[in-house]
Amino acid sequence: MRILIAPDKFKGSLTAAEAASAMAEGVLRVYPDAVATQFPVADGGEGTLEAAVAAGYEERVNAVVGPILKPVGAAWAIRKDTFGGATAVIETAQASGLAQMEPTPENSIRAHSYGCGQLIAAALDAGATEIVLGLGGSAMSDGGSGALRALGLKPLDAAGNVVPLGGGSLADVVAVDVSGLDPRLATAKFRIAVDVQNPLYGSDGAAHVFGPQKGADADAIELLDAGLRNWASVLREATGRDVNVPGAGAAGGFPASFLAFTDAALEGGFALVAGLTGLAAHLGEVDLVITGEGSMDEQSLTGKAPIALADSARSRGIPVVVVAGRILVTPEALAEHGIVAAAQLLDVAQRKDGVPDATDAVANAAKYLAWATAQVLEGA
Image (cartoon, rainbow, N blue to C red; front, top):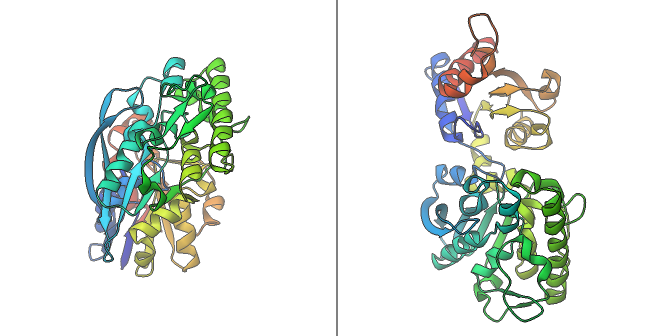
């Protein structure tokens, strides 16, 4: 039997690669002669870099400016092609992630994407002709302005001064100086993984929808939203492009600046990552797919990696088994995506009185994931 083991991360407990390893252990308990291929997946957010490295991209680390000016070490990856070009994979969370700052109203205003721009510059220096940007877990709401500042753009206020970094300063921008903008931006291909449809500003925009999780209170949200609205106006004046489009609100509006100054394309995250890593080729060679994630819920059904993978497998007639930390959707809902069996860690991580022990499930996720995988295969 040929089995593709392709989970997403179990957030808070296991990386996708660690989850795949634990699942493989469970598979081999039941099918010791199986060809079990481990292939971590991601949907374009956090975990995209890990999936790329697992697929053969070379991981590199650069020291960059973090989201509130403290230096951080940020990983990215690159793979050269046979035609002299190279593809780089960058996650905004590596350089400008929410995990790198305390989410307070003050920090939500100050946070910026400058470090992401430094990673892009490093990728260009390394010969990248295509840059994939994975969004998710970001700290900033600066419309990508910080990243472009690291690449030579100067946002100016009415007095001709460069405004401070951060989304809180965007309302003061009246013009941009593009004379120092890195010319390589015009020739590099940018592919941005976006699975949300939020616009840049407004009630459904970056500040109102995602600002609170970054620490923004009501006043900060209004300031950030006004700044993003003004930034869109300045970009439109400078480039003639409307950047307030569906998806531009992802990662604090990060795509907006690249939609204005490059030929960036917004793409569905799972399909983009699957194409980069060669997942489709593996799907054509297996009899069963096993996938999963930390929490399989209604949001998962909107196209996150495990469900998107299940849909791809179903279209090829390949059955899918899911093992997740917890499952909050019905078996009928899973069956609509070709999932023939499912198990959750909470079914095996239980106290002596039979009550699920979530703390134990997280602390010992690898052990329980192997058990749950073996159990669901024995019963499938």
